[in-house]
Amino acid sequence: MNILLIDDHFCSRAGVAGLLQQMFPETRVFEADDVLQGLNIARASLLNLVFLDVNLPDQDGLVGLKIFRNEFPKLSVIMFSAMDHQSMVYECLRLGAMGFITKNLSRQDFIQALLDVLSGKVYLPSSVTSAKRLNNAGLELRPVTDAETLGLTPREFLVLSLLVQGLCNKDIARLMGICEQTVKNHLRILFLKFSVTRRVELLVKLFEMGVVIGKPGSWQKNLEDQAC
Image 1 (tube, rainbow, N blue to C red):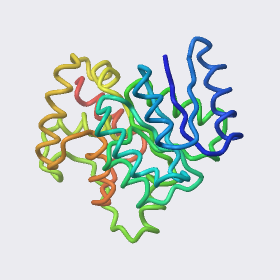
Image 2: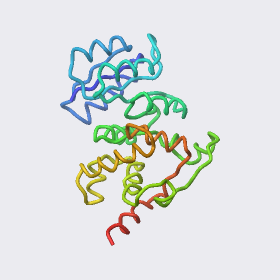
Image 3: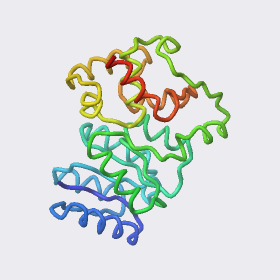
Image 4: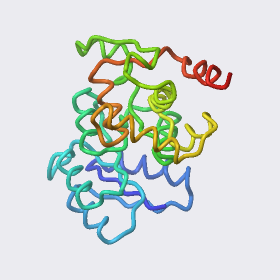
């Protein structure tokens, strides 16, 4: 696995690089000070993942994200920042980032965030997605516990509930006892109903709508009901 770190702070890069190599000894970690240097590395190497700092000396990290997404549309990019303002996180997701990791995460949380992204999940800081922060942002929360409220079928709502938990297609399929292609079919319908094209856009749409899917653990009850 090849991972590129783009951060103008040497100590930050070195810390992340060291942790990555401890977790995955076979991983090759490339380092860059700015977007241009990072692009040159990406053009010369087959990368699996890019960590991109939001604040860089040569240009804004969001501009860099646009460039990477345009030139390498299949390459996963995680934004990396000391701040986690909602507007910034949402904009990163809209531009195609697969996650947003804050630099103040604990070692354990950072490892979990990385594993989530590598397994196909979307990682967002809990400080952004929590109901408390949504309230502070002036959003009117809409707790939703049934499919009809969102115009969905029970199965679509169940898939949405699991997606919001951060699960990837494979895990959703396993928990629901269906194949991954069926999960993809449900997601395609969800994308159409919410007028989005990607799972991260769907998450952003729900956050902007102030929609909170059920209560913690309620999706587990939904699974039990589906099995009955």
